[in-house]
Length: 392
Image: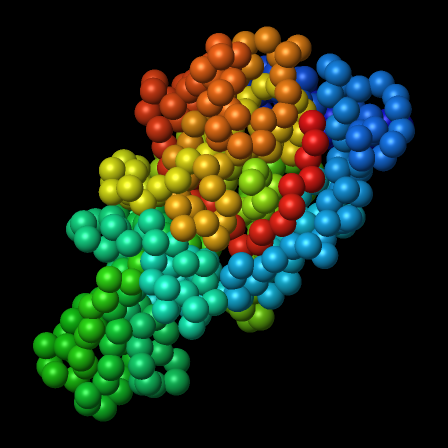
């Protein structure tokens, strides 16, 4: 049997997925093309053979090339317990990143989050997070970040306290840090009202900071991020294993993008893409972070070269690599279509994409073809940096 770029759909599954893909402007014919049979990549394996629409790509060759650069990968986040750029344990081309979970309380309920990025260089160094100066403006405008209270001392079971959880209109995965220090006899505080009442009674001092931390919630009072039961393609679900609140770990899919970055996906500011990817619908990310200058940009393809990208085509290209001073994990989503798919070629950077757009080769869609010119924002932390493998 020839290797395939994704699994074969039955009629019912195809119709279901086609409806979901249409939310981002991927047509049924394009979906069929993305899931057609492909063969080995001669650029990777040195072998010849038929290709899909002139595109030499298949998952097994991609995995082989990915394993060859595994030793060059760099962990960017200290809370990553383990990672791999790909795996033979599932059919999909993606790897995994296993994170340490952290516990918080919201209105007396337990929530669990992962930590990835911060706006403060000293905090980033101390906590082994990615330093992202672009997140700093989120501390200045009301509503662009939630509040997370971190405690110094206190009772043994004291967790961080947060101001919101997924499902709330005001929820956002970015938090402004406040430090709480006990002055009176410590007791368990499990809500914002508990904290403010303790402050009013003189039992705690609260130091408000301008530190912003990207700490997406992955399990909350009535839900959690979805596990992909098939592990064959980008969808559905972004987890490989569910949040384990005993071991305090969670495992994400780890995806390739240009330049030299591997990323996970946690939140979308539009409901349609959130449902499609089974991530958290986070309206608090819509508009405000972009206006504040806190976002970067992702450039996604919905046709052209078949590959491990979100819609079954080449990997997305982002404006900067993780670790660059201008990089942000909050990505404004733009989509591109080749006007002549037969002329499609690999574009490895935002500048190359814009050059092709300006030359009239690509159609550009703010957001996606179905968002009426409105850009939406995705939270895509990048816990690993590694050389790009995909070659078209």
